[in-house]
Structures are given as structure tokens and as C-alpha cells.
Amino acid sequence: MLSHWAGAPPRLTFWGDLALLAPATVGVWAMPEPMRRQGRRHLRPHAARVPADMRATFVRAALTGFAGFAVLGGFAAVAPGILGRGLGVTSRAEFGLAVVAVFAASAAGQAALEWVPQPVALPTGCAALIAGMGVLALSLALSDLAVLVVGGVIAGFGQGLSLRAGLAGGPAGLTR
Image (tube, one colour):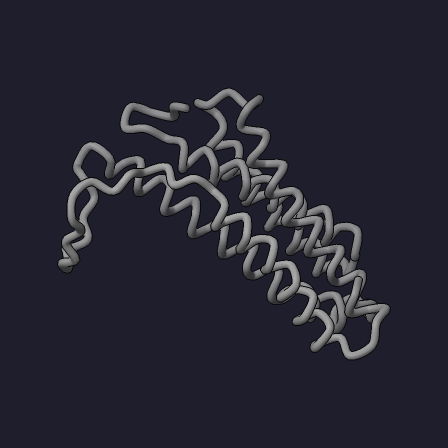
């Protein structure tokens, strides 16, 4: 919105982001440390490994995380080009609102894990992610802005739900 209605969009949005980092930095510094350091730290390189009892959970979380972030990152990166070239949208505010809608849907999907039964959360989120990508493809074939946003919102919701469900999983299934 700022880049649409104010002058010098690249500079102003950069300074706006920088201004928002200040309270975020203060908030991080003010947070209590959840872990207490015990003993002296030993900084040695270790081989990356996942304990055997956590491998299924790790693979599930890694795959859903990769797929979900690929979709959201891809949408955020290419949506302005698709909107501008493919759909004739010229407003930077509309570009931003389309991307914000997708990320807001992702946050809603993460919050929905509280109400979606855990055994179906991950498959439901993955199905929504796939369906959302299908609707996005359809929007390109139809050159329809509303269908593009709906597809992005479906994919965003699926990303949020599947990511949180994958991260909440335990070795014997999804647990809280």
C-alpha cells in the first residue's frame, strides 16, 4: 500500500521495513530465554543426523515444509509478474493485497490445527495445497484475478495447516 500511494516506493518500503525491525528486535531481546545454559559450551562440528525414532516425523515435516514454502515463496515471487503481464493489473496495492491474502490464509491454516482433528490435518492440508495450485493454474488459463486470489488463498491455507501438522507430528502419529 505504501509503495502504491507514496513517492519513492523502493526507498520508502525499505525504510518502513527497517522501522518495523526496531520493535521486533526489542521484543526478541526482551523475551525470556527458555533454556538455561548448563556448563561450558563446546563448539565442535557434528555430523547432521536425525535420531531413528524421529526420522518419520522429520521426513513428514521436511517434505511439507519444503512444498509449502516453495508454493508461498513462488507465489510471492511471481504473483506481481502474473498479475501485471498476464492479467493486466498495474496497481502495486493489488499486488500486495493478493500476496497478503495468501500469507493471511497460511496463518489461518496454522491456527486451524486447533479445530481440525489431528489424524486428518496433514493430508487435508496437503490436499488443499495441491487443490490451490490447481486453481492457480486454472486462473492463468482463464486470465481471472479473482480465481488467482482464491487459488492462492486455498494453497496458503493448505500450506499453513500442513506445515503446522507436520511440525507437530510425533513418532507414533500427530500429537500436540
